[in-house]
Length: 96
Image 1 (cartoon, helix red, strand yellow):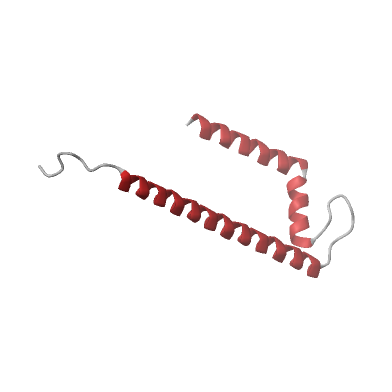
Image 2 (cartoon, rainbow, N blue to C red):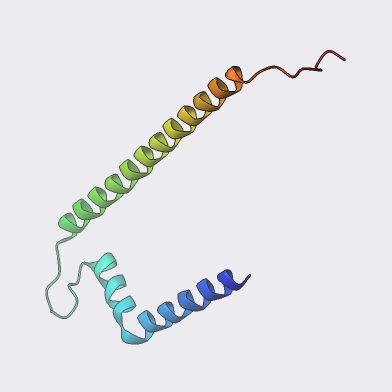
């Protein structure tokens, strides 16, 4: 409970800080219109589409590789557990 209150407080503080400082507004303007913060330049729409496509591809690739790595670790641990279980002696009074 204490941990969730701390995490919620920090999240709310950082959100308030980003909104009040204008960094959130600058980030939204960059993502939606390609306007570079602090300048009057903007990135062309084709370049923004390319950047967002690359970012989405990297995100999906990261998700897939993490999921694959996680399932490989689970399979290895399961195999190790089953091998250990097979080596264990049977219970002495299992037939009673």
